[in-house]
Image (spheres, each protein chain N blue to C red):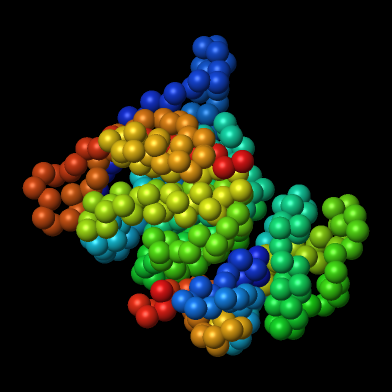
Length: 123
Length: 239
């Protein structure tokens, strides 16, 4: 599970009002090499929940020096884009779980795939 | 293990946008690289044991290649885009999208066996711009993933296996998720029904092409060897 994907995931268990962001409890993390595509990263940045993204990176010990707030003119800042690229697309959570901040319900991550399936009583 | 079924299909592209000359040149160019993409997608492993109730069957490499190439060349909705593949199964559409330069393609499926095959395929192809989520697309709240993806591509279940209406559920979810466009396959026999829904939902709908393909006789109770059905390749635009 990449952090770009994590940034979109929410818990929609019945009754939960704010199941976002999901807390990552990782037991295995990998960093891959993914081709750097500045155009794509630049386009994704405004679409991210930036605070949740930074929090997730921090929780995995992968924050390095990503700023808490977006730098102005980031589109032209290759160094910044590379840092974002690494955390957004290269860091991968292989094993662990995602925890709903409201209900505490845990969604397992196995072999890099988060299982967001709800039980019958949760829908 | 690749499926033993062989898919026959005729692909008639309705090129409304081009003059005759341009369409020939376009066709030649597209066809050369189309064959490469199709060849490449033939390496994608299909379901080991397709699950009847989930209406699982692989999208043929030919159909997948034609769909993806049109989405990429005619509409530019793959390269550098964030793409979702709903009901991704073993991932043939996602692998094609990733190969064509999607920024990231995320596959969604309910079945962990299919996702395991998808994962193996991703590793075989050495693709790093793919991710996957296990969830029930037929049962998602509209707010979840709303407008999170540029493009959604899919070959949804047609609702023929005690899951009536599943194709429209998938479509509804897809339309919530996409910022720009949804590309999907639906039975031609449902075209009018879909047109009405599209109008109700205020989305533009364009039948990009008509295909026909065999559904595999992989389900033991099939009386005939295969079932030939007419299918529309449709583009819905949300922007």
